[in-house]
Length: 232
Image: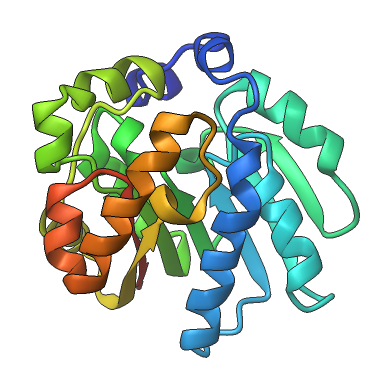
C-alpha cells in the first residue's frame, strides 16, 4: 500500500527538504487553532496523517486542553525518526500507513498531504471513515504566476506535488470523495511567513495589494495561497 500510494521514497524528501518544513509548523498550528475557534467541535482525540517531523502536533500539544490525545502517522521512516524526538505523554508518532489504522478519531489533520498521493481520491475516501471531522490544508498551486513561471514542475521536483488545485477544484475534490464542507478560509503563507531572499521579500508587497482587493482573484493570480478546510 505504501509504495503504491505515495510517490516519494525514503531519503528523497529529506534530501530536498532537510528541515522537513518545521519552521512553518507554528504558523500552520495557528491556522488549525483559528479553525477550531470558529467551529465548536472540541476534539479530544486528534490524528495527523503525513505528520512529517511532528512539529505541528507538538505545537498543538501546548495550545489545546490537557486531556487532548494526539497521534501522528507517516510512511517515511526519516520523518518518524525526527518526530519521535518530540514524543511525550499524550503525544506519540507511528511509522504506519494510516489507511491500515483501525481507529476512529474526533479530528483528523491532513496538512499539505493529498497533493502527494498517487490515488488521491481513493486515499481521501478511505480516510473519511476514520474521523468525525477532518481539517485539510491544501496548496493552491494553479495560478497565473505559477504557469507563467513554470512553478508547477518546480514544486513537483522540490516538494513532490503531483496534483495541483485551485480553490474550486480542491473543494470539489473533497465533495467528490464524500465529504461535507463545514468551513474554509484562505491561508496566506506567501505573506505571513518570513521571506529568506530579497527577491522574495520584494514579491510580498504586490501580493499584499492584490490580497486586499479580492482574495478569490488574488488566489488565482499569485502563488502562495492555500486553503484550510473543515469537513466531515
